[in-house]
Length: 148
Image (cartoon, rainbow, N blue to C red):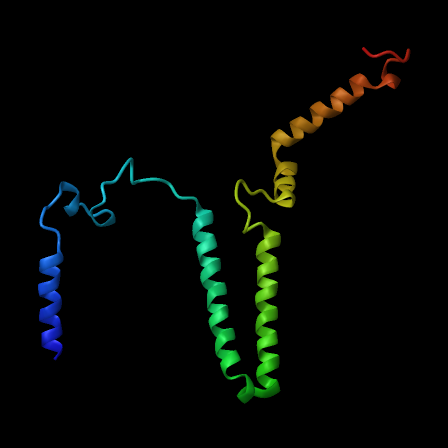
């Protein structure tokens, strides 16, 4: 019976299959669809990051579904275990959200940027220039109260 099914499928695919071969058929891109433009485009890292987060939280639903199926057999221990599991995942989601992992675009951490800027010679020059401007514009420095 299996052999008859295999032979039937092969005959049907030969009868219903494409007769004419196009130049794009042998290209290794999208099953013979003619491609337009350059296929070597740069994809943002955020797409991969979101995909990884999706896989992690998708697996969470698998574990919660398995817990729901065995809900009555697990008792209170299973209930507290799933509460702990959901709490840990909630903390992880809040951490991702607060750290900016779910935001698109340029990411800079203000604390890190400020710490790096304080130690750089350029930041010290900028601070010195701002202080010089403040001294130059202050009314107490001229004695007459007018701006120089």
